[in-house]
Length: 500
Image 1 (spheres, rainbow, N blue to C red):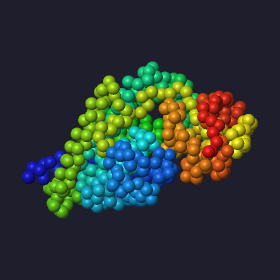
Image 2: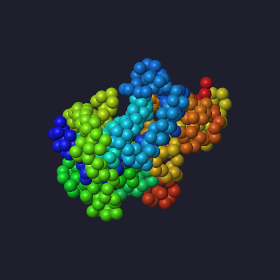
Image 3: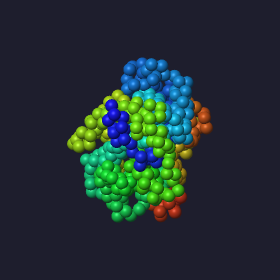
Image 4: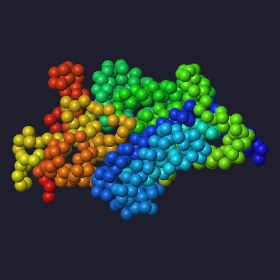
């Protein structure tokens, strides 16, 4: 027992990781805050009682992906709101660092609460919650809760497991690219990516218009950052901090040139696990040297603690959590080296120890689905004048060729993202046809998801769906036309359709 309470807890401590813990816990909590805000604003029209894919129907059929509180409670829009508000309140407390001043079990309990609440949402979220950053946020919340509070030193095993999560995230993405489209191997992927990515941002066009040699350098830099740099995270300081800094810089470039919800910000936050306090203090001398764990070490055996200032119960919790996460990630380790590598896959119902990856192939053309409405026409006869047709404008996805793309990340516009997938997966999606039906009756909840309703809240007489090829305007085209986008004449793929 003396070995257990003195030697082992001392080995668990990582006194050089106090600032890493601070960044990890507050950063992940901030991302949960954004995720719950996105859920409050979008879940009900997308998945609520009258949603495009109603969650009650999913639960009644028993087709939820895994554990969810709504299986026990039953789903209602009111309960969803309560869950979202509670999630935001708990997230805000953790961002402020208030629970971290208490006993080590307190931030753990709150992070597990966030994990359980958001897992309940993701498991009934269907295609609108089928993105890799959802499972990344779940796994991150579960893991950083085990870092404890200021009353104990940061546990070294948990910092290593966060580094292991970053490794799976980055190296998995690098391997999926090398095994994916040839454009990653012949260095042409970035000739297209900035233009064809799901949701460009204000700087995406400028990034796309860079010369080809620049795009080749981008691809090479991506391969280095994802296939080589992650190994540096496991090396002693200051090499680990250098690796973390390199990952953060490459992710900031992705933040600057795209809208990938909280994927890039989560990677930046999690990479902080490899930052050492000693390195940070050399870089930023004004940083406080003591965040509270030193005082805990001096308290010794206070409150039933060990000789290293770590309570025995906390030692047991950290070791149990470490073993659970290691076991859960074994399938993901095998997946990294599998010829049939899976991308963004979970191997258990709890979405822990996941496999990650993104953009194994890059589309070379941008196809946009544009929904148009008219109040003209009569009976079953739509108007012949093209001027009578006006588009519904989405908040994030391209539409109006004169409109510059906006910055939305880390906020996630779920409907806009699914509209990007439509040309790839086909228009015969249940949610999309339900969307068209709701637009025909001017459903207020659905209209609030859009930027602009051409009928100003009135029900249209007809709607139709057109498909266009979009590309960024060159500098000369931008000067001549004032357009950010150029597009072809398009073709009608659905409709015109009238309300019945």
